[in-house]
Length: 354
Image (cartoon, rainbow, N blue to C red):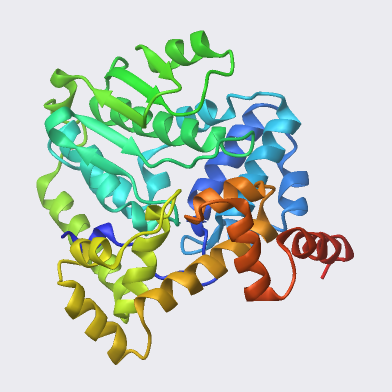
């Protein structure tokens, strides 16, 4: 398997984090819509030092709340499209520059997505490319709500804008599919993407036109591309240095929960080892598969309760429990109180500024 398909172990936030490079895109889009971004940065405690640091990240839930607040402030439910329109290759960091210097548009977008971990980590999964279908897929972030529509919109539109930038062409797509249901903005989306857009689809994706996929890029520079790719590889290795087998198992578990319990066999297969070998490696680290699965669920459950307004039935599905009652029972075992009681405690702490 490709080692870069793995996400890093959850450190500060099990739900993931995102580079302030993307936070700045969001703020630019909000400002373009007439929002006083100074109010937003103060409200979300985003200092100038944080916003100007190429290495700084914020948690995914915090980014979601920031986006929702920006949408409420400007009244534009399609703010994600504005984010895409204002995005530049450099806003994806070194991966964007490496992609921009690729020889073809297809190679450029594959490079960008291949190194997405350098700027964003989400417990839900990683974006993928299907070169044979010229399709770029953004992982599911169900259940959908007003907090996360803009995330799908911004990612798909940023990929589209990237292709427009590297080719100098406006019409670059064959079609777009979006998982969440139509919000009544179908015509706006089709006008922006300049192709058919299907809502309520099975996946979030864009399909690139054949002629565009094979087209040369306007900034192609093979020597610089190779150098930038080497730098991306070095940064990826730095991220992964020190990962344990347990870390790798945790990173694979979360995207696979979603209504079911992943098996040892499934995880072992994804890691390219036998179930027995995986058990032996985990035992050497003084842990086990069931223990890791329970601990991963515990961390994620706590963060969903603390950081989001996701319902208990949705959290149960996201963590692979058969029903909310099963989640409720496990939560009491972990924390000694119910999810609802814990959420109330977190809300009180937030209001008191703790």
